Length: 344
Image 1 (cartoon, rainbow, N blue to C red):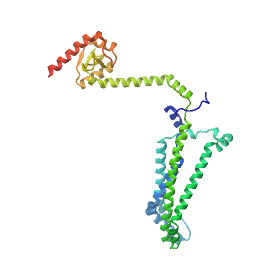
Image 2 (image 1 turned 180 degrees about the vertical axis):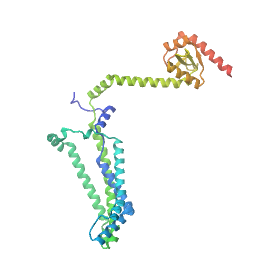
Image 3 (image 1 turned 90 degrees about the vertical axis):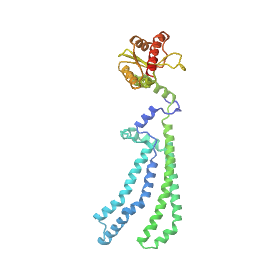
Image 4 (image 1 turned 30 degrees about the vertical axis):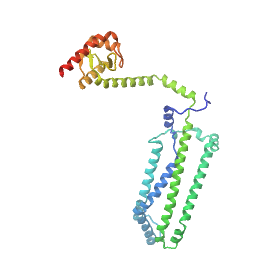
C-alpha cells in the first residue's frame, strides 16, 4: 500500500505538515533576481546621494597620503553610498520571500539529519533527475544572461570607445550609464527566468506532496477517530446554531417563556407556513439571551410555563410545532395580535 501511486491532491492537513517541516514552494532565483534588480535601480540614486562624495574622498586620500587609509571622511562617504544599496537589497529580499511563502519560520530544516551526510544518499542526489534539471536551468540562465549582456555591450560599444578617450572624471558617467543598461536588461531577464523557475517549483512541490488514496483514507480515519477533534467540531456547530437562533429572534412573533428556565421563539406566516415554526429555543443562559434579544427587537414575551416546556421538548429549531400544541399556541398568538391592534 505504501507504493501506491500518488495521484490525489494534498489535503490541508498534509500541506500544514509540509509547511511545518519547511517544505514550501520557493525559488531562490526570485530572491537573487529582485536583489540584483533593486541594486541596479538604486545605483543611480546611491551615486547621487553618496557616490560622488565617496569618489572625491577616495581620490583625495590617494593624492594627499599616497596610500589608501580608512579616514573618517572616507568611511562616512562609503557608508552614505552603500546604505541605500544595502537597505534596498534587504527589503526586497524580505518582500520576495514573503510573497513566495508568507511569514514563515521553521527550525525543522536546521535539525540534524543523518541522511544529509550519508555518502550513498548524496551520490543518488548528485545524479538524480532534480539535479539534472537544476544543472540545465543554470546553464540556460548563464547562457541567456551572457548573451543579453554581450548584445547590450555591442550597442554601447561606440559610446564606450568614445568615453575611453576622455579624462577619467568625464569618462565615468558614460561608462556607468552603459553598465547600468547592461545591469537593467540582465536584471529584467533574470527576473523573468526566476518567475518561470518559481512556477516550476510550485508544480514540483505539488507533485511531491501528492497523496495516494490509501493515505487519504488513513488521514480521514485519523481525523474521524480523534475524539478531541470531534468534540471541537460539535462545539463549533452548536455555537453556530445558537448564534443563528439568537439572530432569528428578531423575526419571531412571540417568545414563550417558563418564565426563567425556558424560552421558545415562534414565528407564523399564513402565506408561507402551514403551522407556527420554532425559530429559536433555549434554557438557562441561552433562554436569558433569547429574552434579551426579544426585548431589543420589541418581540412580545408571554409567560406560559407548561407551553414553554412542551415546545422546548417536542419541537426543534426550524421545525413546525406538533399538532397537539396548535390550540395552545393559537391562543398565545391571538393574544399577541390583540395587543398589536390595541397599540395601533
